[in-house]
Image 1 (cartoon, rainbow, N blue to C red):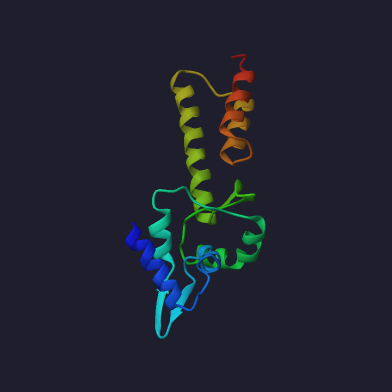
Image 2 (cartoon, rainbow, N blue to C red):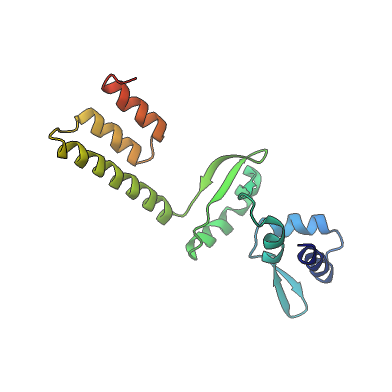
Length: 159
């Protein structure tokens, strides 16, 4: 790990950055931004691999997300499916994902909802319209799983 770190520091110095911390801040938010070393381009993935292996994804501040929104959208357009975490003071408050990922997540919830309704029907009953409406809201992402469970339990008088 120290070797990777030393390599990153050397590459940053060769790329013309005297202040390593400033260079890392500059390049750390966009791993696709290249360093220029003559005609050779070195990507910042080396740094990310060396220092973030095994770590949770980093949260962008609202200012950083706003400044990089066009870059993030371009990344999504080119097939990058990695979520982008956004929040104040590095505390995640929202997640940006490509539309395809969101559609997959909501489709999976819809399938789970349909399976639950089928399970009820197999038992010889029919899901109530109220329970179906709650499940539909959950499938669209309007309410959380905990809220959905709480509302269905309250609907049926289960604590």
